[in-house]
Length: 152
Length: 255
Image (cartoon, rainbow over all chains, first blue to last red; front, side):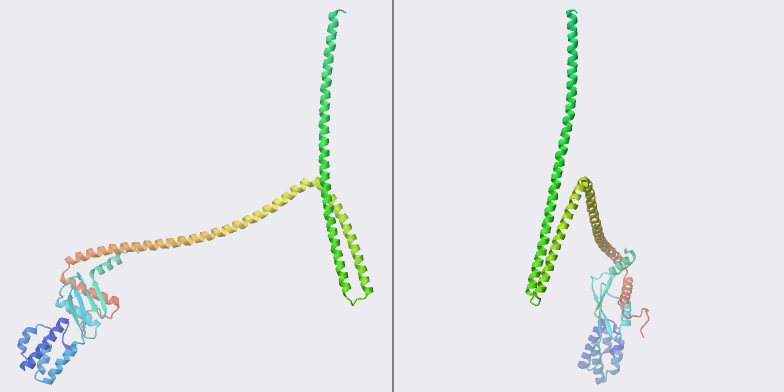
């Protein structure tokens, strides 16, 4: 099941889709899958071990293979994409923490789509379920200064 | 007796004669002055009295004429009433001729009595008027003064009432104007207050904007990537909290 696979970013999702396409090429053209060479190219992705495990267990069963691949592809459509605009590339730790914050809010599967936007100096802008969250440091500072120094 | 003595005696007699003549002339002139003055005074008084009498007579005659006219009018009214009554009676066929004559006689009698009564009333009124006129001659000035005083008092009373009324109205108007002014003043005060508040808010917003911008630039230059990431996570959590989205704030791993 694709839902059990660790997919956190849209990059993960896209890479898995590409991987499945490549697997299909091996499977139908060459009749076998060379996992060793695939591992060199895709092994760094977080989803690889899970997917390899599942594929390897059913690779000799044509029906199960087709079922698994189509299950993955159908599963992709269920993912919600949360767009995050930032002025820098996120670290793995940051991705994990952001992912955790949203996984507490979401029961449905989702992936984070990090988009580099240099106009966002400090902070981030997030498009989530029709909401636009402007995590602007200037706005935050403004609120702090206003709450402390505003004449009422 | 010599010539010189004769001349001296003659001179003495002449001086005496002149002195007596002058004395007598002066006395005669004084007497004449008082006589003329007295005569003029008496003549003026007489003329005045005549004039007043003529005036009184004219007033008396005028009053008599008016009373006479009133009497004539009264008699005419009674006569007309009698004629009308006679006409009505003659039109009524049911009454016998004897009865009609009786009524006519009674009306005639009533008419005569009425005429007699009016005449008597005229005489009494004339006498009263004459007495009143005579009395008025003496008390005229006093009465006039009293009347003037009464009129003055009445007029003054009216003026006072008018003044009071005007004062009341003026007071009411003044009160209304004051109330209106007070309202306008309060409104203006409120507008000024609001204007000041808006202005202060605007100024504050501008100041806070500047502070925020400067801080952002300063922070932007000094903040590390790690701090930046923590900042974003914190801001995201705050935003979620503000929006009221369900969120477990503890950084606990999801089951």
